[in-house]
Amino acid sequence: MKKRVVILTGAGISAESGLRTFRGNDGMWEHENIEDVCTPGALRRDPKRVKDFYNFLRKGLPAHKPNAAHLALVELENRLGDEFLLVTQNVDDLHERAGSKRVLHMHGDLMKLRCMSDASHEFSFTGEETLETKCPFCGGKTRPDIVFFEEVPLYMEEIQDALRECEEFVYIGTSSVVYPAAGFKSFAKRFGAKVTCLNLEIPSYDPDTDVFIQGKATEVVPEWVKNFK
Ligand code: APR
Image (tube, rainbow, N blue to C red; front, side, top):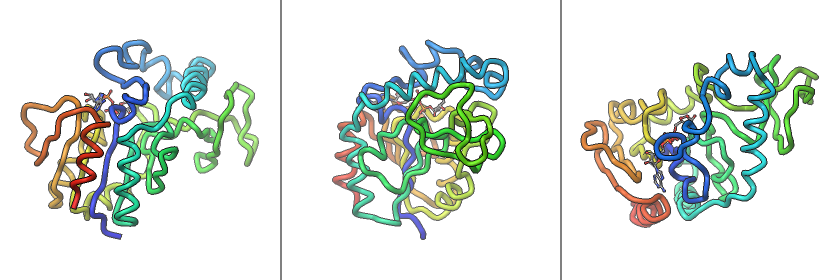
């Protein structure tokens, strides 16, 4: 179904729930090397290191709760139904715990593992992944269900179809530097969508974005949802 609105969220929407963003001051990539934990090469070289990194993030996740921005997007989804699509770059489960249903995790899902022999074998996982963890479908080796750098994000066809037809594309809490997600605004714009940005920092110039709303997600997202017509 044609979407009224496609939303893209990034780490900034979860920042006020206490989760680290990736870039900028004290961001995740200041503390970890991408090449050690988030590339196919890292998984080949040292799978234990990679799995332990995501085990640590998974274990910490329940302590963080959805915030007012996550909840506001649920309210909008309840109003729009199938005319609403939420695409997130986040691997946390805060959108789901807030109550979002129509959500695509384009960079994967911390609360899932997938099989290394057959990528269609993905399954919910809450524990600690080890080198011995096996795929429940075929007994193959597993890996975190995370899209590493150099890998192709998930659901791209479905996302592109939605962007091509949507009336409005809104990106929230993302630095818009990681492709392909960073290209969604120009893609949607080219197909006629209004493009809106809600973020703590906004660029001085961006010809693809029609409306900038600067502020903390927990403040600007509920207000934007309230005014959405
Ligand atoms: N409210 C709104 N925006 C915020 C807030 C907040 N409280 N706090 C931070 N931000 C903004 C920052 O200004 C920044 O523009 O959120 C953005 C976060 O940017 P990144 O850390 O780069 O996160 P993101 O854009 O989600 O990263 C994209 O990069 O490393 C990969 O796979 C990882 O999905 C991730 C992708």
